Image 1 (cartoon, rainbow, N blue to C red):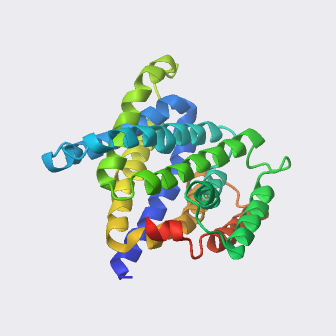
Image 2 (tube, helix red, strand yellow; image 1 turned 180 degrees about the vertical axis):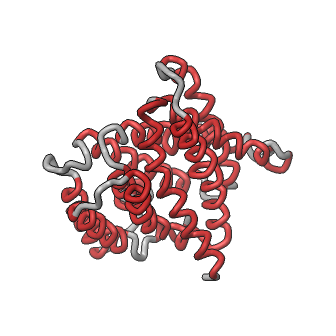
Image 3 (tube, helix red, strand yellow; image 1 turned 90 degrees about the vertical axis):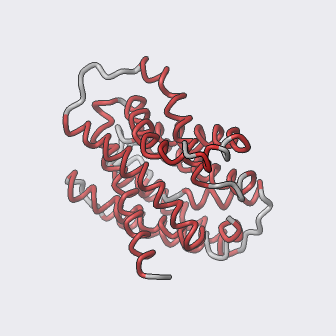
Length: 288
């Protein structure tokens, strides 16, 4: 793989890894619903000038239903769950548990796409589960049980979305599909947002966190993700999952002064080993 694509892959991991830090900063002032809607609106502003071009606009009608499904499964539900989870967990925990998407993807693909699962992948799943247990325990000071469960459910929705795209939209233009799912999400959440407006104006720090989250960690990061899939394929792009926990831990330590405990290091390493084994020779990813 060319050096420039390694650079883009690393940059994508850094941007997505930073999202959890900004969620942690902005959620208390915006509220989970308000922050998610702000994030989606800002990301939509990034995508709309591209989506409204004639050559892309004509591609919407055949896939609008799939984009609508993804607006809930890949945006509204997981974004909101992670925002709620940030009220009871450190940002590094959010990033590590987000990486469990790989395990749920394997399970969903097995039952829905009838994918073959090897002994090595099952072993990886079991190792990953052990890593989750290390992190998600009543004695952990980094996360509440409710927050951890919210993260795991959110990750499973990301997994569903990936398998859904493979099942129904494998040959669909990903820019149009993902872009319109963001736009639909922003519009659908507006009525609910008005019911949960923050009681006071968010601070400048929270506003900048929301702006970064929407424009950089969502809007431009998704554009980079789509670009990588087109240039190096989904298999190599999927290795970004290894970068997210690493950068999530680094950003949380540098900017939020979060403690990197031995539990976090051990749990993260166990989960990463599990991901490596669980995604090895995965035909689902090769076909995507």
